[in-house]
Length: 267
Image (cartoon, rainbow, N blue to C red; front, side, top):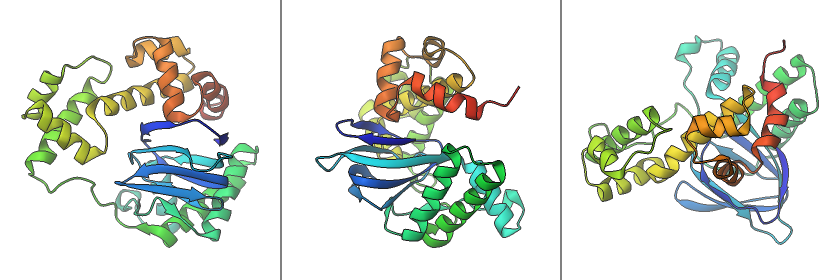
């Protein structure tokens, strides 16, 4: 996405992919990993998969940025090719700092973004992808990925994981708090605190995130916004539309028109 935001505020959300962005003008302020961060013009943002974050303008003229999302499987493929090691043995990188100041990374990311949205051929896109992932990992990443959870066996971590498993299995259904707490094996209050400590958001926010991801996939597959909203578990299309904009910054229709043709296989 290439966007210029003035007053839009992103609700706390996360992505199921790595997210890399370059701030081109202005400044963006967001909260991530327990602290408030600011990305000014020329700076790079790097989010790990499932990193909760929000976002808003930190300057009077807003902020202009380019952002792209790269799936973990794609990153693994690139690193396997670069390192000439078996794909199943590749350790995925973790980016400790969500805001970076590095001209080399900025140039690589801008080159990749331009290639992806500018209609460059597959060879050019692959070259920029390899250059960008390699630069990000070599210059800023910690390897391998460290689990963002409490030690195995910890009561708080275990409760949060059990609740997460139920939410993932029944994301489209309305799950009462009592049932979620029973599945976690603790009180509702204890679960709320444990879940936020473990995953950076409330259980309801996490469930909504799962619904949004499912609906996004349905849009790419060609479903209408109404169909995607209903199948993913949203109360109605307007509810889905409102949350899609709050978390992704574009309407479902805009996303489908932009991403659908690029992601669906050619007939």
